[in-house]
Image 1 (cartoon, helix red, strand yellow):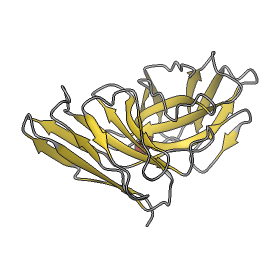
Image 2: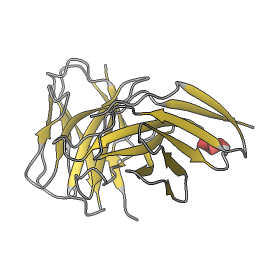
Image 3: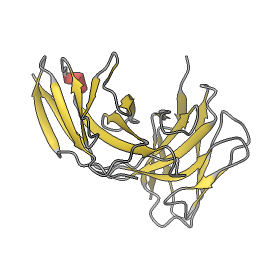
Length: 112
Length: 114
């Protein structure tokens, strides 16, 4: 499974867009990019995932570069409740392993 | 109200005792998973089950056991053989196991072994 690299921490002003980058330069053609977030002492919350195309849902947008080597999660109007650790995960569909490989994620702090 | 429930939220046990963590889902998902999280780290897979009566070891299965007798239930037993059992345990489920199917997590159980 491909490895992901994320910044350790980021700050964002409340009401502004939060752009969280993720590098996955070794991603294979059949590997999806997933984003989860975890608020302290809670289970990870699914946000969004994609393969090649950009994706949007009620929580966020996922922008995947054309070469698929990096992606950006966009929270369009960050609120204080978006303060959490955000995990970018690459998951293969054919590796035979049915797991997510979590890194240490990006700690996003939304500032009032 | 569909979802994954884990109980209890906090669990304390004495060293050398086995303990069983509960995980129930009413999402009609076929696949279920157990992860362990240690402070400041990501999640590591303990066991997973793709269908009833079948389960596979993950990366850190030593000292743990599971069963999958019912589709909605996937209990995890932490045995006395687990060298460092104090951790945050997370259960997850998914409707399938292909790459484009998301896993959904429960609220977790924090186990402290005294």
